[in-house]
Image 1 (cartoon, each protein chain N blue to C red):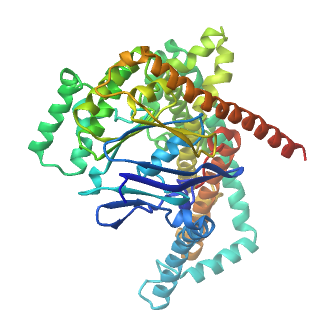
Image 2: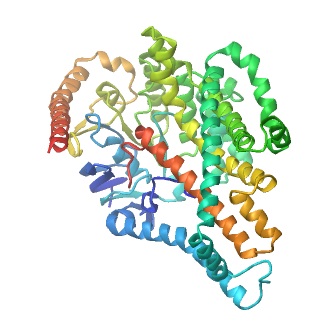
Image 3: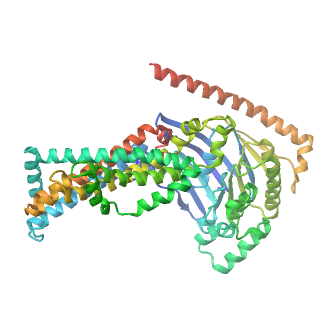
Length: 297
Length: 271
């Protein structure tokens, strides 16, 4: 997962400084300056090799160890066997169906949680009395392991989709609320003064300052909550019901289909990566000022 | 080579999303040992870029800078930045100590040097304070002390007083004059204030609009030790006027360039 989103290796200046002769320090063009294009290309090549090479290397080693019977295929089937199971499960349509069910649950829960979190976070960040009254409550809910509430959810909402979606939403909601409120409270007074002196209303202040200013923090929390949401999703699917990727993984274990178990795990993790990239991509789209005018070398 | 700093045809380009931008050069200059040189120029002309190249923070795209220096490289140059760049989580004392800690100067010697600069800068009573609690002038003093405590061969200053109010700036200029007169040190000082440049420098280099080249160098004829009273003399005003006449053209040229840039961008967007 790329933490560093926009700087290729080329921008990390390698110094051209060197001791030319005794008592003289030279500042001269380094490799990055002498041939900027080649340097950038080398940087990108190295980035890509590391990015794609590492997982490939892991898979190759895994395959080799499996073939050499160093790994017990009962627990560690070879990547080839897993790939075969993947093809079977995709072509039968089973995996796609389960992925779709899981993603629908995820998006319903995550979306609702994020939306309510944004609203409550904005309210808490803006109105001090609300913060005083509700923040302790939010903190308390934050500490409760959400999975512990699942039986209660089942009791309240029955056996359908609702309890699963609500549990994911709750997980996401609390984190987004806290992030948003904290970010709003942290806005320096000096940033608000141009709007105050222009007699902006609360809504205008929110629109012109608060919202854009806290967007970066909101997107960090959105990215983090994709992981938390997936965790809760898989857990509840394992515990209850007969659909979704969590169920695929769990039922594979029960019938001792180890290959399919891996297929479930890998699909889930790829979906998680895709979700995070989606969040980051949307973040770049809605915050053009963050990447504008960045020097690339 | 005899010059302390010998810069030859230094250029620097930057790659932005809209393409390659020439920020500097070709820029050529020589600075002698013990000289105080100020670089002035229109905003965006690359004067800070030049300073960063000399300081080794940025490589030149082409050309070279040769610095004559004996001894460890850590003592060759110190830089004072415009925005202080002092660390909020370190006390005044710890901030000043930074360079010494990194150079692994023995504790006793470091203590002694830090104390000397704390007293000299009038920071002794604030040595345990965090930067957040200090005024801008105080913070810039910390930054100056942090640069000087390593006793660098060359002091590079990037518009160090630009963020200070006029009175504080005057006080800091006076202090810098006193420090430089007490111990001769090679100083390269970037500023946009002609008045500041003439008061402090032995020579003033004027840069052209972007990409900055050396337009002219002026010898500042005033004897040291100097005091800020110089500002009242006719000679001072005359020199300031002379430099400003040259610089004004460049500032205007820069403004037209910006306007032209804007136009061509719009044209690109249309076509």
